Length: 386
Image (cartoon, rainbow, N blue to C red; front, side, top):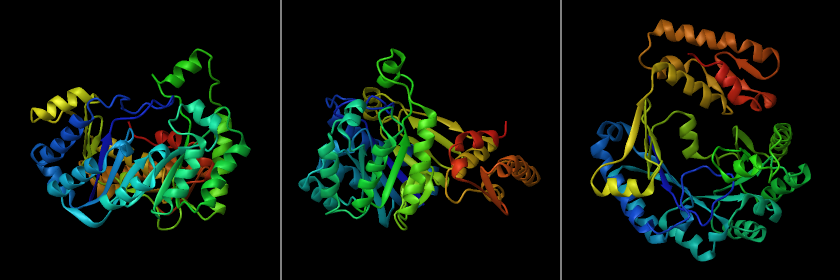
């Protein structure tokens, strides 16, 4: 069982905080879509064992960039090529990321006809001043109207919200969350604003044109968020993700469970359980390579210790937590007695986090508390093996 991620590297304009691979020029869009189709077809030749062992594709995710810039014909062609190259399971979850300014009744009907089953809408905020500050392509009216329209055609919708920005008061943050709840949106992904290297946001903060983020402010808003959404019946099933029962993201959940996945498009990553490979993050080089019958990728084989550390990192971010007994079944290349020693070390090292209320233990399982989730990455890193 596996997933497929499709990276569409185009946007109308650059958000100040974004460090993903994208271009605001659509000049090579047709060529890139053709290259995407070529890469999907080539994968069985370049990675035959990975394709053979992957099983049926359960999820397909159009990310970016802005996939809602694709035409219906382009989406149909990509899905058709996936079906020709892989076995796609009946009832597969097919997600499309969309910006509010691209959402119209006509586009919604086209997406449903293409087989899209889930929409991921990049709202970020319902306040005009926040959207201008982020340099988003949509305005506050489009943010609200797009959701009202989308809910008429799709039941399975997730939206993105950003918290911890300098101008976002706790009252405004609550209004953003309450608006989503009021529409019955079943899934919310919430992210603390991160100042990424080489972004316009980092440059403007460094030049004192914008205020820097306040980690304490972000932590406070995250704690408020967890309380509000728990009261509204959402499961906090991953650090940044909240869902009504039955509406977890199947695609993203497969990442956190360590399942294999294929990524297509420039900068996209793939994983087969023991190895990871990723495409070059350059549109022109990607296109030219595929035209010559070669996938332009780099690859690393994870050591057993790296596999253990990844399991610690991704598992502690989830509601279920880290099942240390999984180490024995999942990690290859280490003797069983060594695995048992590593398991015992993890349980012993977690004791201090349990004593200070950041973690709880139930048998072989370790889970983070509300306060522990504020420090998830740091706690995970502290449990890593060298």
